[in-house]
Amino acid sequence: MLLERKKISAVDKITGPGNIYVTLAKKQVFGTVDIDMLAGPSEILVLADESGRPEELAADLLSQAEHDRLASSILVSPDRRLLEQTVAEVERQLAELPREEIARASWETYGAAIWVKDLEEGMKLANQIAPEHFELVVKEPYNWLGKVRNAGAVFLGRFSPEPVGDYFAGPNHVLPTGGTARFYSPLNVDTFLKKISVISYSEEALRRDGQQIAQLARKEGLEAHARAVEVRKLW
Image 1 (cartoon, helix red, strand yellow):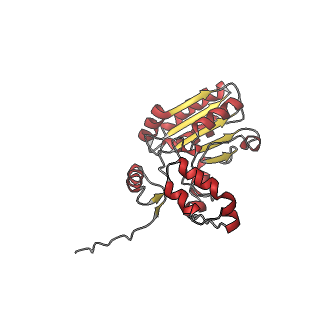
Image 2 (cartoon, one colour; image 1 turned 120 degrees about the horizontal axis):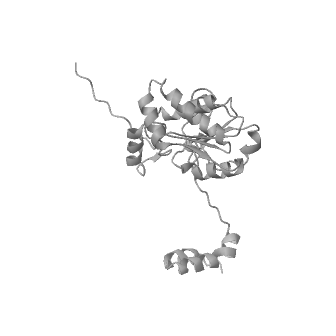
Image 3 (spheres, helix red, strand yellow; image 1 turned 90 degrees about the vertical axis):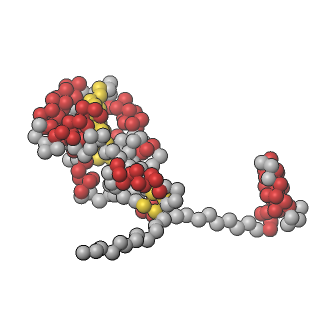
């Protein structure tokens, strides 16, 4: 049976998640069309205080580690005991995962448990890393939300694990990775909007500003720009 080859109509923008092949394809066409971002591999950073529970934190870290060998899972806390217990719990839970090989490769290469002197230092570190998923597993997460500067999505409290955002919470889950949350936003309605500048000057306004415009143009060595203003003979 012969299948008819169908062409896909050209588009102006490509958005959405995917693996490394999708990301590299988007990278190749960027400039010919627009894209949302080059996302991936997946990341999670958890900032936890002593209220965190090792079994929950370990599960949250592994929820990203099982995605990809290149995924990154980081726990930051001022509580050394919590860090040690969570690392041990990660090892225990790894052995139970169907995707253990992938998750273990991710954890051993890109996983980390980082001790900080206090939550303030932990927040500064999180903002420097600018993680895709940022869990605030602290007693009063809303008190810390205003200090978040760089993250794709923030999950507040121990009852907001990352998979809630993946599958059910509602916000779009195509998120910036690799530190690009410093300057990128998640996929959102604005991604699909295109803006056009509109300029309307009155005769009075051009008479007021025209000489300065011409002067700036000549400073750049663009004589025709300057003359396009002066030819109107408003001064």
